[in-house]
Length: 574
Ligand code: PEP
Ligand code: MG
Image (cartoon, rainbow, N blue to C red; front, side, top):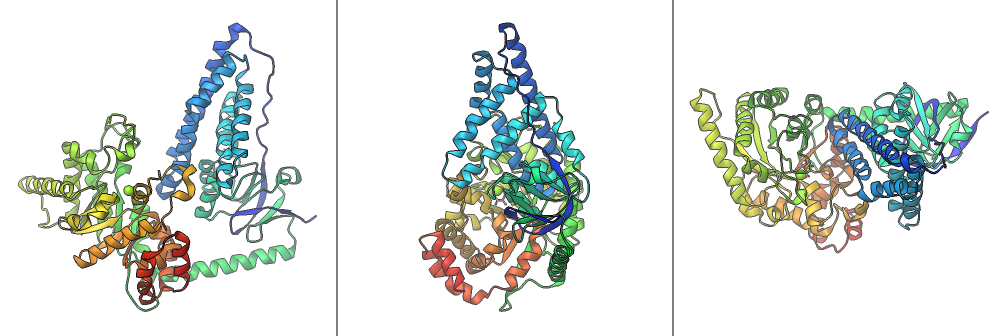
């Protein structure tokens, strides 16, 4: 019989499939206290379970590719951090050693204690962080009980299923959606959770807070997730299915309308031409860039060549990767960014960097490259050689002052000379540009322009440095605000300076591909946007609705705004 289970929409859309129930791991906890001579063995058991949990997380991270890898990777890293949290681990050891609890009981006590702290918080965003604690502890519990939870999850990886669960960790969500799971019904969870954010960006319908789902549903029940209405329909009727088909038809129509935009020019409603570039690193993303009618690659991140390996990629390997990207773009410009790694990401790169207390403010990006001239020269030589196959621009990350870019230019000239002497055909001129992601670079933009051929604004980092808000620290939530008036003023300053110097300025941070920010960026005078390929069509669509003249006229008011709310209000008037 048809039943409707109400919930809260965490990611909109609809999905029809068979229920796959995943009961929360209810661990049988042995309450008998440990004998003195059992303590060390129990601690060793806990350590092994912690190691297994970490290995699982690392494996999960290794399976992610492309843009998703960045997004989900951050969530997985957050879980890894929690797994190594000194307070958590020491608390567990103390419970075992001093309290004589068995590892399972100690885990449960620590979990309950942490969850109580989160539950007591007023802020729903912080409250939602308790899910992370739950996921991490459940993973360790599962390792302890020798229940290979990842194996269980794999069983769920069957096409056409709706996962019904208490909650799900982001890495697993990404994995399951790649294996045919169509939607998620969670009994717990929150719309602020990492998984919810991720489900939205993957367009995977997700309901949270469907309290009775695990008791009301049986494995194999036909379930229609209607996240447009915020409900799950069990045993849907013909009428429900018609509603689903209509939704599918409308969504397909919208998809087709957007697909047609792949061949359309990018212009505003009042006919101003704009350029959309792609942020890419994988061959698939380069193919997509062309198919979507992008103007080129605005940001080719090269870190992937260096990560997850114990030796550095040599010149030949790098050259092949860069050349293939250039060939793949068939004559459109490819902006290759030199290595942007620091102490936080250097593990397993063969770079052997010393640990730093504050890697985001440490030796990263161009700072590292200039300190390792041999490694840098190898990369520059590979890029210069690839430049024989099509237009290449060299983009330098984390530039703080013009002197750094001048030093890079000198090094490039040396490399070019050497390559020519060795008989390589190297183009006469190269375009060399700086990322504007350090506030000093934005404030001193004129000096930077005097040594740059172009600029690319990296708002992901610029926002973190201007707002003194770690981009990876979820607990800072709303503080990481791309609409902050101070940030807008800096963006406007850089865009204006570029226009005056007649040098291209693009924006390649996440907001550059977010249709919600399209009117704002147009108002600030931006004409070149770079984004994940999956965002190109939506952005083209959003830009086509913008009236550039009206928005530009708003700019002086926007720049005087005192709050993000005022900015949002002003934009409504254009
Ligand atoms: C940025 O900082 O905005 C940017 C595009 O670079 P990344 O995200 O790679 O740091
Ligand atoms: Mg950056």
